[in-house]
Length: 98
Image (cartoon, rainbow, N blue to C red; front, side, top):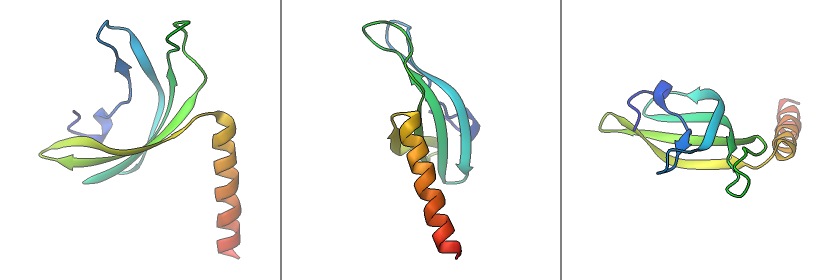
């Protein structure tokens, strides 16, 4: 487990040493006892062995006993879905600002 927000990663390697999740980008939204981080990542297809399309995740981490532990996550399964979320958020923000 990570001791700092900067050490948090969603890279994941299986017991055979093969990387299954490859983190591409990371952006820290909030730091502190509760931290929120966005990731862009790819997952390895178990049948082909190739990494698939880019996906996104927003994760919440809680610091306990000096280490950050994952608390919750929301996965966005495609660029298309991410664009829909961005468009809706923009629409709502525009309405609220009026």
